[in-house]
Amino acid sequence: MRDCIKADNAKIYYFNPSPQNSNNGLYFIRMGENMPDKNYYVERYGDTRRKLGGIYVLEYVISGEGYIECDGKVYHVKGGDFYFLNRGYAHRYYSDKENPMNKIWLNCAGPYVGAVVSSLGITEGVYCSHFDAESLFKRLRDLLVSVDYKNMDRVYDRAALVVTEILLSAATANRIKHYENEDVIYEVKRFVDSESGLCASLDDICTKFYQNKSYLIFRFRKEFGITPHKYILQRKMEAAKEMLASGNMQIKEISNLLGFASSQYFSSAFRTHFGKTPVEYRDEMHSPNKEGYLI
Image (cartoon, rainbow, N blue to C red; front, side, top):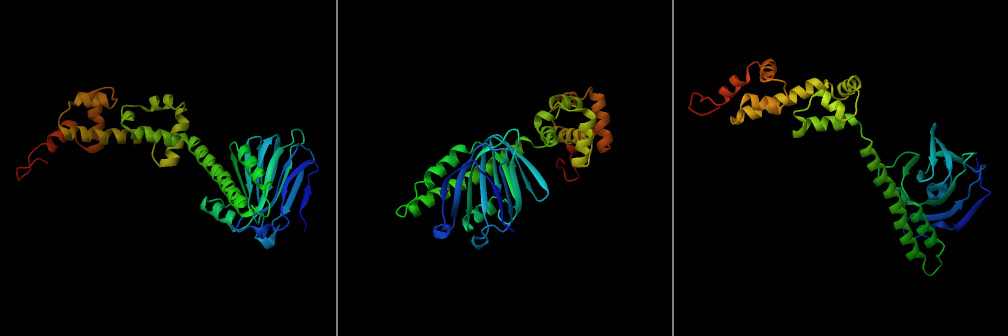
């Protein structure tokens, strides 16, 4: 089955009828730019350029919107988005009728790209990222339009570096996004584990992280198998043991540092947790054993 391409409003910047003339394993096939066109539509069936090992597609949406369908999923892309279409996957992509895409693109093949995407852990059929790739694509365009038989190897090597930079930038942008969007529940746990979180109550934490208490309890227990209240108390008790073992702090001082309402409440919680009062634990830690050494 032949690919279906409807792209009447396009500029072709580069076309290589013999892409395997590259000596670096990156075969540049075609590069161009599509102007906004509500009828723009591309459908490929996964076996394009089979002799070259399959086609890779790199595209950057300058403006407008569009959709990509692959493996039963639909991806919505818009201005500022980069997407990479992996070889061997059937896919279709098209412009939004009301706000069609203006995008710049590259079709390529060869083992070089395969090695780069493998090292970056890109295995899916569609890989999307949001970062400003327009200048990189234009640099690539300027390189490819300058190719002639005298400078081919040098230009192709420089172009390969730009392709690598595009893919690496996409992966970096996604890692940063993942970190920024990391579930707040891990931020809560990191805070509780920190020294500054030792004196915090569950209400304090909900206020600090703008969380509903019921939802925070549900998410924390689901993720870590313990309620946040029990985990906070557990952390406070372990810290209390360390402070008591040092022998330099009063019970009331430890209670205040750990955010307990009173030293009586702290002592009661400590006894419930360890089976002995803070005073008993401290005396035990600082009493001599049978050999005359401090425990």
